[in-house]
Every structure is written in C-alpha cells, then in structure tokens.
Image 1 (tube, rainbow, N blue to C red):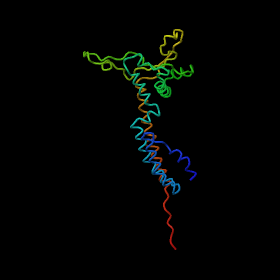
Image 2 (cartoon, rainbow, N blue to C red; image 1 turned 90 degrees about the vertical axis):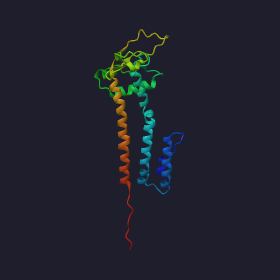
Image 3 (cartoon, rainbow, N blue to C red; image 1 turned 180 degrees about the vertical axis):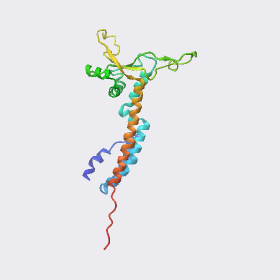
Image 4 (tube, rainbow, N blue to C red; image 1 turned 45 degrees about the horizontal axis):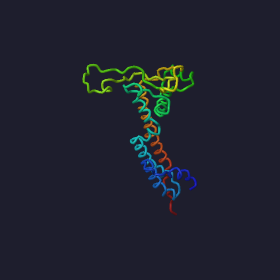
Length: 234
C-alpha cells in the first residue's frame, strides 16, 4: 500500500465548487475499493480512462484549459489587435495593465514567427518588445450610407494586416519624459498568422490529450490485464 501513497495524496483534492475537482473526487471513490484489495493497475486505468475523458471534455467546454494555458488571454489580445478603433484599444503594452494579454501574445508570436528580421531583432536587442500593435488603417466598405451602422460594421482589418513589435515605447505618462527614448520596431506577423496559430494550438492540444493520451491509457490497460490462472484439478 506504500506504493499508492503518491496517488492517494494526488487525488486528495478539495471540491471548491469546481466540476473538475468533482470528477477527481469521483475517481478517488472508484479507485479506493481496489486499493484496499491490493493494487490492480489494469482496473485503475480502466476507471481512469472515462474519468480522464470526461474531465478533458469538461475542461475544453468550460474553457478551463484555455485559462490554464493563457490561450484565453491570447484570444483577448487578438480581438484587441483586430479592433478598428485604434489607440488605445489596439495598443498592448508590456505593463501591469496589459500584462496577461501581452505575455500570452509575445510568447506565441516569438515562438511561431519565422521572420528572419524579427528573430535577428530579438537576438540583437536581447530584450522583449514593450509594445505590440497593429500597423496601418482599416479597410472601409464603400457604398454604405446608413448612419446607424457602427464603425466596426463598415471597417475591418484584412488577414494580412501587419502586427509590429515595438521596442522602447511605453504607455503615456505625463510625469515621464519619453522624448529622449530611442524607438525601434519591425513586423512580427499578421492578424491571419496570429489567428491561425491560436486555432492550431487548440487542435494540437485535442490531438495530444484527446487522442494520444487516452489511447495510451487504453493500450496500457490491455497490456496490464492479467487473465485468471486456470490450474488443473488433480
């Protein structure tokens, strides 16, 4: 029973009103009877497979996994960069106000972008950008003369609209003199690139957790299953 100590500790979560913890609690209740009879790994895995499947599906449906991976903040940042209202909505700074959106975007763009100029800029400066911003004016749909239409209904950014990394600029502060700061920047990706990377991230996660992991558990269950011994009676 000592070998089950870590598992017993891991499963001993409080509920705290979270359905994921409820799934773990149910798993614990199903496993404990087997633990009392002695460890039977095939039976434990057989119970874990549906529990893991339900927990993963619930995590995707309710957005828990997006929150854990900060993908939700990357989506919020993409929505801000796609807005046609410009400053200050589409200006995402590396400061306390925009911290989560900025870090989520910067992590994904720096990892996924294959622009040589951007890579060289990051290596040479040895610094993170201080601002992520959409460059250029939105496209206006001509011929719409309805005065009650909102700005985002008649203007839009195309998928190839560039997103820039800027090094140096910070959020405006009247008490700080920013005129002497050297500002540099360059293209990091496009709105279409960023949208595709965020979508592919979820597809890859579904493949790893929803297909590979569950099937590996199923294979392990089959391999660990032992047929009852049949001894001949004398």
